Length: 430
Image (cartoon, rainbow, N blue to C red):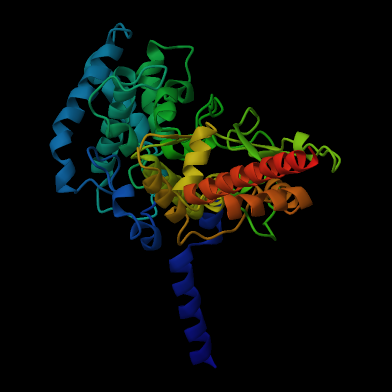
């Protein structure tokens, strides 16, 4: 009996060593900075790998990123010398000491933010945090303007700053911000200051901004906040077939840019019912966000989706990507959405854009979907009598140029036959 009791105590202690005491669990900080899951990383390794600059400890040892460390130091020096002008009576060393003390005081909190524990000492980690936060602030200050345009040649850097694995805690960035930028931009919060970066890396067009608070996980988390609706939205999974953009267009659905400001990712179906006699006056519209597709769109999508998969945040971006995957099957769907101005394709190839959209949600867990109701409306319209007839007619006679030519040739021959018959009847009567 004593042996059994001793074994139980050993097991209990082993479990406590793994998960911690109850008090420690209650006060623990959930990690918010992760390495991307291998299921997602293997699909597109370059989407998670920094190209120019390493931020935080996860990619610090990457030899390909060491060259930029010298340039990073120049940015950091520029920020602190600029800040010193506005802080009379303090030397450069005194200012830096104040900031380092602030960051070092949160070192345990900082380490808790990383799911993968690094081998760096507390001193190395604190140094890294101050350097990287200073670089981010100075890069935004000197490299991006209010419109979100990049004034520098470092076009990769803004996208390096929104990688899931390339983050520092937002509270660290805010601490350094308060020691530097806020000294000469007293009325500006950190979230307002980094807005040019959010504009530059934003997926959809429009005025989107996070709240003025600083309770975000990191820069990527702040970008994710831009896609959050003002009020909660219930999840509804589709129970019927989701038709492609081309099929919906053949059924009379018109695609238009979204004008809803309550939710930047909103999709809304507006169906105007008319009687059977005046069915042709019905002009159903489907409003969507205007998606900007370029060579970095997949990167931003994948990092936001990975963040949603790993964190306790609502999967708004995952849901939007899934809806776009349903609407887009081929390059013809991309072409239709481009002509409707709900997609701006900077890739040049509609085929490439369609392929990117179709593979973006592969291996992604589908837990919630926020467009089920609107897509159900489109399905109901599509299955109506006249829309189905129109789609059938389009597929039969307008699916290729030769069919269209044959149709018009048949019509012309029919008209000529009728005319000939009329003249024959008239001549016989005379």
